[in-house]
Length: 423
Ligand code: AMP
Ligand code: GLY
Image (cartoon, rainbow, N blue to C red; front, side):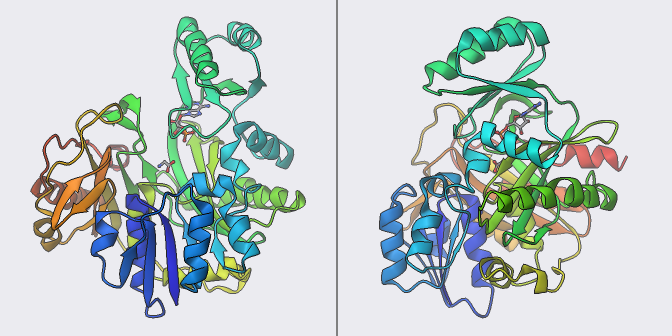
């Protein structure tokens, strides 16, 4: 089987790495890929932008690709799923309409409300005056969200009325036509990456991300600074509720709208201190860095799982098999991220880290000749799997510490919530 992975992050490195472990997968193409996928055996990078969906479809067609897996949301929201389907190329990832579950928060919210899925209360606005009047009425804390893809910069959790007003003005200035204002939910977040063939839906193991740049979850939002899996907050009872109250009704609602959704349905959930569940948002793709913690634990060959979705026979797939233990992924970023940062810094120590029994997934890296250099904000993720969380944390940091590049920053507290839960 020949597979093509779209994207250039740690998530895509993890996808390609996992797919190539399957005996059935002969070759992998990554578009555009990164320094890590360039070095994988039987893997080749193709330098096209992820937005160039026509170009990607041509590459897939020309190379007679058997399966395309789309990592990021942007090509999905541009319709890469529709385009590949039209060309008869099997694709894992929803159509443009299905991707609206991520690309339009107001559309997603209406869908969830109609399906009876628990969400934060809120309203949609197309002008600042009305939004501000609503904010005044509701009081703070309150959350202001862009109704469109914003590369992680579209959600502002505000504590005061002036902050909330500024968030409204900023989003309209950024060019969004619609914004959402919603109640601020309190609790602990959990990421449920589920796979669906449009009829059946199955959760992968629950994970927890660490979105803020600073230790103790302070500072700016990032793409994600680390993750662990499984997340103990998601007890079997909670997962059952997620399945019945959230995932199944959502998939049914998508179907009712005539949307044939085959891909990942990623629910970002808030669990309140009382155990109440609400969806913060849906994503139409694998989460990053969650994927770097979830996939290494998957024992069932990934191509088998994905093909079952693409061929709409997920119901027949035997239960997924998982390795025992806990995976912890720590992301190392460039100094200044998520703001401005420099690129082109030499990266050393990856082989030494891997010799210690961790896996390194590269993200913002590039090969310049035989030098591996930084090429993005999130540079790489280091994942350790050990018998329990504490051991995995110790080992993952040994790995992170043996890798070096100028300006390297990482959070030292990945996994702290689960750790304190265990006492
Ligand atoms: P997103 O970038 O859309 O995944 O959302 C970023 C983050 O914003 C989420 O992971 C939450 O931490 C936070 N967030 C979004 N909606 C709410 C809400 N209603 N209440 C509290 N926090 C929220
Ligand atoms: N880990 C957050 C995301 O993938 O959106």
